[in-house]
Length: 140
Image 1 (cartoon, one colour):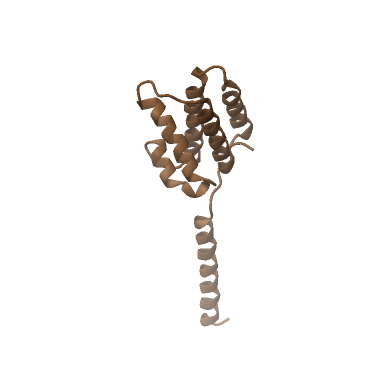
Image 2: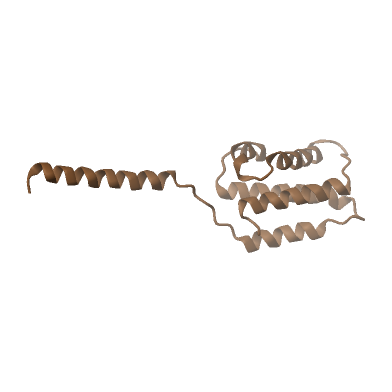
């Protein structure tokens, strides 16, 4: 074989290897959650919500927010706070605005003196967090 043919074959091989490396680096990585663990945790939170016990309403929202934040952290979403992480992964949720509303409700509970939360707000936030966890693949 002549040197030109060998150089051509080498160039094609190098280009092929570079293409494979580029595809591997740009491929979206999906995190594998322990779905059973997340479902168990979410079900425990969900079952704790009691229409007749107002003390459970705020706690439900806080615990859901913690679980979603844990999932985002486990996925490797960067950020110091849950809000920072939400800013970086909005494309992962079917309704990012709803997730933000639920998170803002959590912040109100955590930072205001004696916030008034209704059962309806707690149940709605629970449904939003459930969908968000489904969107991430943490629960089914």
